[in-house]
Image 1: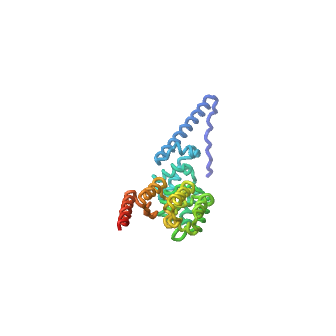
Image 2: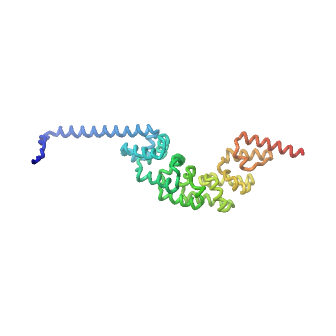
Image 3: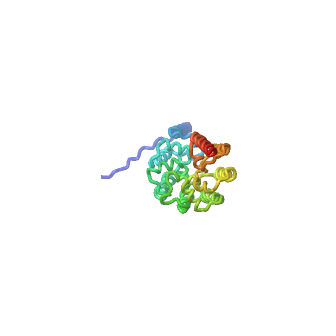
Length: 291
């Protein structure tokens, strides 16, 4: 039995220019309408995530031509790692370039690095990303891996290994951020090993600016407070307190009343507790004079 292909009868040729114009007009208007609907769907989706569409389009021009499925894929990618939609929306609003990222080429390699190289436990992974979303837009080869190797050699290993609280250090430049901070602390007169111990006790030290934090606070401590570096070694958290709002006002109160306190007693407590300790110290001084 021979099957024959039935060829449909060709349509009659179009003899009028008006017919061609009508087809082109209909095709263009339909295409424009479809594009408008698709674009509006993207905007509505961004708004549902609480992502600012205007900012996102300005910072990521590729978003205009990207299909809605691209946005869905990055949302699903982040959701697969335990992030809630509210957190995903905040991250995408901060870094709109992620909206058109390729999950398999751009994002999953970062997840793999954090989970398998840094060894962040999966239950902690969500906290690490929420604490430092910049991890998701940082090149693993150019930045994350070299910084991880430096931090590991510096002492962030074993019981001091990086955790969800300290993975934000991975986005720092070794050459331009980490080393200058370590060198500044050594330059104050501290030994390298002493600085390392301080940093391992208080990793936030590597997130502070030399010019805006270290220098003014160190100068105030050494010149105005006549401080001893031994106190800084034992209480490196000194650099985490505001110079203008806490360190200076409390030091001046102590000076006015002729009192002194260790740095930790002076700074770690609330204003109410500090005032209570100041009164107690004054009463103690009066009693000592009467004896």
